[in-house]
Length: 345
Image (cartoon, rainbow, N blue to C red; front, side, top):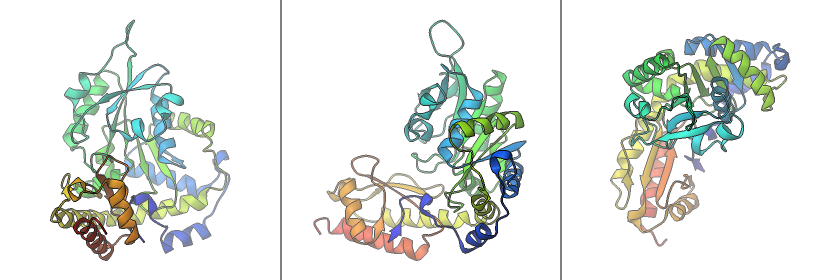
């Protein structure tokens, strides 16, 4: 099977497996796992932040990131299709005690004008704004990237008002690869950033939350409350180190494969590609084939291709990654063409 459902399906590389087997470990709840300590130090350096915290999942990282900035009863401004709003089981409300103030942006990229219009001051009626959140790259908008000037303006103007900014940077390394700049430059305007080691970077598990040391220390206590206080977790941290140091440099290959898929699929009758991919995420519409998204996805599965279809009646998503090379993408194109041209078979 060729699995293009997500970049979370990547398997650890041989180098990661060796590093995991040989990892020097200790009790991380006591702060004594040397491999995790090293990973957190290097992640903080990569982000240009004071400190970093390893967490098991991106959802936990975002939840902690929201919570360290806010108080119960505040609003969090985010884009209407943000992952924190739609795909994290309402943790913003359930754990952080906040409600989302959703702002629509066609390409998923907020600007200061649209944010400023939704800021609520402290008063007797509206819940006050406690945090601004940006998602970079934006998953449900098709892997779109925030322009650096836009991020800088958001950070500068938010801080003038005393508002913090958190970035869901699950795929921020993809943004860095596409822009050709260091991650530290992208995340400089925000107070905290979460990024995933287990997506394009290929580690089997784990994410990082980076930011000011005082907030990260607070986040460490929140991690324990959420069940993320783990013991000899350096066996996973070792894979994370390889991901951080070795895998970021190859993400451009995934982007090129995604562009290849977009070009090829756009030429198939009945297929409509939503936008030219900026990174490794592609959405396309199959309504013109006479099949629904689930039907189309099911027929692709019969041909050995896994693609997600849970995004609307005829909307499908695919992601390129380390475990799907150009040959795999070519096979996927052939399967899509076969299904589209033979919808009754």
